[in-house]
Structure formats: C-alpha cells, structure tokens
Image 1 (tube, rainbow, N blue to C red):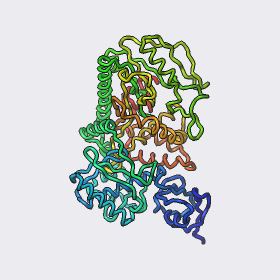
Image 2: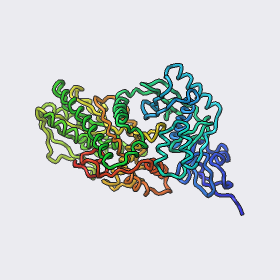
Image 3: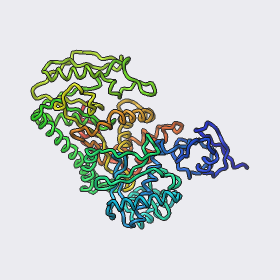
Image 4: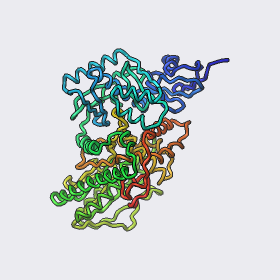
Length: 555
C-alpha cells in the first residue's frame, strides 16, 4: 500500500507527492529554488505551523517568509528565546521580563544582572555566538506535569503557575540546547534564521529590536515614544501594586467578590485619569483660552466612551462640552480618495473637507452661530438639516476622530486654542514573563465583538478589513501620537476575561478554508488562557460596555 500523499503548494500553484511523515522543512527543500525565499514557517490548511510540522495526510501548504504577519511573529518569538538563552549563559539567575512593544522594538526588564555598556556588549556576543552556531530550536510536547517541573527547575515560575491552572494533559515547550522556554506560536527552525537584530539601553531596561518591516535586511530604528512609554508605565506600576501582572495571577482570583473588587478598582483608576485630564483642560481653558479638545486614537480604543465620560467631568468643572463629529465633514463620495486597492479610503485625512471644517471652527471662535453638516452615508453627500451651534462663554468643543493629533486637521486654528488627547488600549497584562499581550490583538478582539453585536459584521469580514485599518493607523495616527498633551490608556486589566466567551463564539464561525482562519485560530488559542469573568459585574459606565453592550451611554 502506497504511503505517498498529495500536497497542494499555494506559493507555486502546483501539487507534489511526498511520503507520509515528511516535515514542512523537507517539503520546502524539495521545492528547490521555486519558492524564491527561505521560509520561516507555513500555513497548513490555513493554520500557522513551524517547519518541523509533519504531514501524514493531504494538505494545502503556503510557505511564509519573515515579512509576512505570521512569519514576523515567529521571527520575534525566536529572537526573544535566543535573547533569554544568552542571558542565562551570562547569569543563570537572570530573570527576563518582556513588557510590551514600543519605540520600534520590545521593552525588556532584566533582574539579577546589572545593565551597562559592558553587559550589553557581552549579551550581544552571546547572541551572535548562538546565531552563528545555527542551533536547532526544538519543539517538544510532554505531559503537562513534566513541563511544569522543567519550568520550575529553570526558575520560570510564572509559566509553571499558568500551566497548573489550565488543566491541559499535554503542553508544548521549546529548547535551545539545555534552555527551555514556551511561546504561544511557532518558532524558527534554528537560531541561524535570526540574523537581523540589536539591543540598546532604553529607560530602566533594554530595547530588543528585530528587522525593519519596510527594509527587512536592516534593524528597525529606535523611535522616541516617551509619552506613550509613560502611559504604559503608569499602568504597570498599578499592576505591580495590586499583584496582577500576568494571566496566571488574574486567573488565580477565586471569588466573585474579589473579581468585583478588582473591577471596581480598575474602573476607579480610569475615572481618576479622566478627571485629571478634565482638570488639565480646565486649567488650559482659563489660562490659555483653549476651546477645542481633539481626541484621537486607533480603531477600537474606546474613544467614544472616553469622550462621553470626559464631558461629564468637564461639566463638574463648570465647563460646557459640545461634541462635533468629524464624520460629518466627509467630502462627497465622488471626491473621496481611494486606497491602493481602489476602495474608498475614509481613513485618509483628505477624505475630510478640511477647508469647510476649519472655516466653521474659526466662525465658532468668533462667536458666530454656525450650521453643522450631517453626512448622509447612503447618498455619500453632506447635508444641512438646521442643526446649529454657538459657543457660550464656558463652552469647549470635543472633536473625536482618528486625525485629531494631525496638525493638518486644524491648520487654520492657533495651537493655544487646542488640547490634544491620545486614547489607546495599551495592554499591560502579560501571558507570562516572555509573552506579552499585543495591544493590536486587544483592539482587534474588541472590534470583532463590537462589529458582530452592533453592525452584524462577521469575524471574517472584520479580519479581512483589519489589514487596511492597520495601514491607515500606521499612516495617519501613530506618527502623530507624541503630539498629545495627555494620553489615556483605555485598557482594563480584566477585559480579555470578560470578552473571552463572546469572542470565542464569534471566532469559531470563521471557516477553515479562508486565509483569515489563521488569525482566528491564533486569537482563539490566545483567549483560551484566560478564565471567563461575567460581564454582569461591569458597571454600566465601563468603557468596555462600548464593545459588549449594556452601556449607560447612547452611541
């Protein structure tokens, strides 16, 4: 009986016959130069796998290079493990904590090792040695009790604690030589794949950088994100004080009352920061004549609820907040810019009628009564329906939209009239010390849940649209975030536990025969590490209600 199976290679549009038990790495080798690149991982039936994956049945395979979304993740995971292995080689007592992505790299804290120029040089030498030796990064699957023991003996108590609470019979880990670690996704086949990287001192730790996505043969440049870093740090300090910095510690909260206490404290922290921003705006209003509050941030950051809660705080300061929607200043659809795919690009700054917008703001400043437009999305045109605004002596205008921090939006208004706020879900909880929760994933999960509930949009549709949304953010939002006068971190420590079951149900409906299944599968696996928290414990004013429903606010 024949043991050959048919493999459909997406990259080349061809099929090949292989023997059952062949690895993806061996299959890639059989393709010789027809791929045109050196793959780092692959999608097998639209599920991302490492090149050590073995095929026993007919499969559809798409090999991926380091610049692909999945390939980039595999590259960064592998770099992190090599970094960790190098640290243990220098000092077995060194403890690595990878906090979050920022400034063009990954911010890391190293305990048990003095960080100075000499130490950085030594770390780089050890990493170069591991890379040059091209050591195999081996994947293992063992009974969970054995894996927990391995981690505890190596001092990875955070990973052992997480595995202890998941109830899994078997668990996966990786090794580089004698060093064990776990990452929640595939890694490169060997250390030699990780040939572009750098480490530099940054704040109280180091910045670990991989390749530049725009120029993969070069290391990503360091970008100064001091205000964003400070917004992250405030919440990390809060996490440290309450003793919850990773998923295992969050999952360990074992009573409804304790969960309620955590929610109440986290929500109070949000309110405290919103009140501080309100007080700062009020001071600017009295001292500088500030009249326009510009609120910007990427998709699903919770800008709308933040704006509504800010308005309440401003009223307590005896100001009169007036909201204007930037959406109502869209140009007529016939004049809307188009993106590279030829679709209408509503995220472009130039999708807005900047001249009309700045003219109206100027007239409002002059004390005139101004008729406000309403954009009709059905006809794709701006209409005037008698809605007028005239500022009072104590009025401030709240302008919420993705372009709020872009100087081009309000070029006709002097800066002293403006107060700029950047809102984003800067996720500070980690899965464990070496696996952070990407802010982008947090926002994507929020959007999946919200779009399904309020817009009838499937997870598949949201996932298909997401790359375009991300491109818009990279072009129109992130370059201007440091222009902010204030930053608000809209993440909530418990939120992924709250949206877990909703998101898993919606993600389960993404079919396996589409490329987006890879992301849906990855997000579902990631959510499985969280224990669910009942949404009923959230207050009606919670920012998270904007996405799951039950809010006291009208949207």
